[in-house]
Amino acid sequence: MEKTPMRFIIFLSVALLYIGCTTAFEETLHATLKVSDDKVGSVQELKATFSVINGTSETKTLIFNTGCQFAFTIEKDGKEVFNSMNLVLCTQAITEIVIDPSNKVEFEVSIDQEFELAPGKYQLKAFLLNHDNLESTKTFTIS
Image (tube, rainbow, N blue to C red):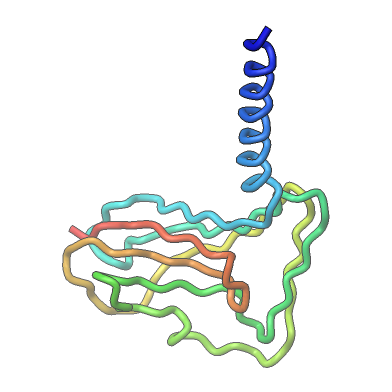
């Protein structure tokens, strides 16, 4: 008779843990970063897609203080070696992104500027401006 309540408690605990884990990620506004190739010959070959995904059941509107909405940095050993914001001019207009439920908005990450990075491992970090929780990081190598 003691086994039945214990089994029920274990089952209930596992079910609550599963529900908590799945809803924490899927039912939020979250970001992902996909790098087309994690080994490149030069920084100009680096191509990536930064996505902001609306995993909620509500339409989300993100407000930005300027025309710039996303940026990315490259770090080596914890030190920033590139910041995309140093190369752009932002309009002084308030802008917004509207993301419907279960949809996403994507930004392409690429570097056209002429500069070199030494061979080694780097961290690419893409993020929405003024929305600190919407960022993602990937490691890539320059050979």
